[in-house]
Image 1 (cartoon, rainbow, N blue to C red):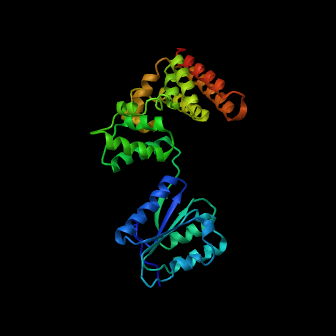
Image 2: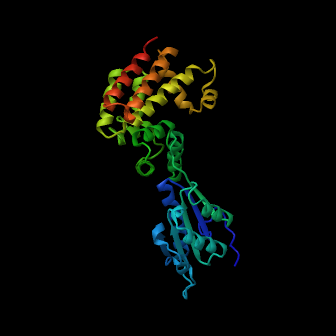
Image 3: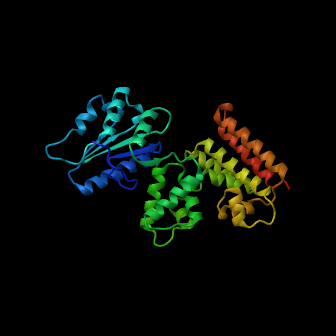
Length: 328
């Protein structure tokens, strides 16, 4: 039997391929398919399998015709780790998928198991991208999307404050967005995020960086000590410091007279951040930026194993950056 046509927006397509390493997005891809299947048939049988549970012949058993013609969802996690014999079974199934059965393959997307990935795409799989969100801009976009999906809205400052407070854990970010959308009438602003996440926001690595590049050494050191005491990883602090100093340098070297919107496009920053960095720029010189970047590089090397005391290395970097901010 030829493969059935697959629509990209149809969770009941015969094959869904979720590609990436972001666990929350992978789980959501599975949940979407299961919800659609159970909406069509409340008695849908769901089989959620790790690679070790799918042995040669297992897929044939799971997808064999039933006397009761029941709808079934078969989820295969980490499909890049399947054995060669099991991959052959899956590829054979892709050539002749069974009626009333939806197969969901979760794949990390790398070189491992690429043959199965290519075969699924060739078979017309509905594909869901689940990439790891490593860039701050991606997490900001995710937060904005969560508020929209919840029928709520949030100011750019609120979205940034939430990312600063929560960090890179998408599950926690999603939970925080859901809570704020449920509790707050109207748009969520920065003040609301501050009330809900007092302590966490103050302990964020970006708060340390903001205070340092503003030349507020005492407040930066206080925020740093609180951050480290509450479990913020030193490497996140050096990353935030680097980002803060680089933003100063990029804005300082931008052509004079440009409008904030033009600067935002040129430098790849949101307009509201241009305004913030412009305020932080006062007092900085080219030599100061160079000194600060050197301090950040030394601290980064220390917290990654090159020094005995990461806390001391970070304190030294914070003081050096704060002084550089007031060197002019």
